[in-house]
Image (cartoon, rainbow, N blue to C red; front, side, top):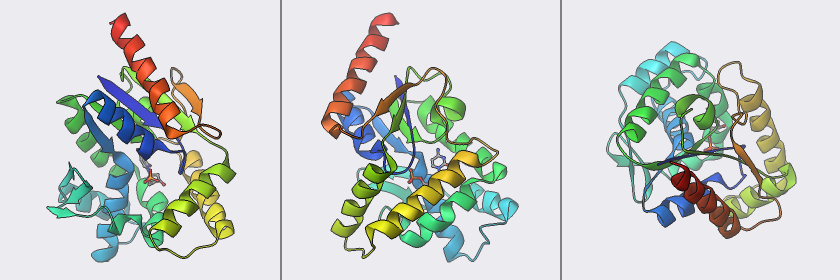
Length: 218
Ligand code: DC
């Protein structure tokens, strides 16, 4: 069973994907964390975010795994570092390089080829797993997405105004949706779910319903 969840920043993908994975007892794979981790490592090793070939080479010599508390890069838990604003600012540039995407898509497929998973990102239903059993495109209004991210960041101790955050979120969505390679877009056969006025528990329950229906069909 492969469940693909795509959508823009702040739509609730991670919370929902985690909930669905837990309910089904299968793995949760956050592909955005891989692009963020590569961006973090590029910053640490002074690789230019504009240099696609160097970034792809860096990706090839990096190990990405997932543990109970998130992504592990070269054996080190990295979930906290990759959520910084600096990484958030540069990750769209890093993830727009075709050579980078080729390498990370190979890694993502290798993980989900061997086991059931809920996999979240931007291009999962369209590129990474076009044969996924259930495809969801999760969205919400920009104001609501910015509100959720803002709450999350304040809770983690970061100081940022709602207005600045909303501007950064809309900028990142525009970059992700207009890049020439694998832009953010729903797959033709994706269920589009708008989470603006709904709780994550409701969305999880709806997706579990889609999974059960897919299981009955197969
Ligand atoms: O889901 P996120 O916000 O952590 O993702 C970080 C960035 O990575 C996002 O700006 C777009 C990019 N990304 C991507 O291009 N393809 C994916 N499958 C997942 C994320």
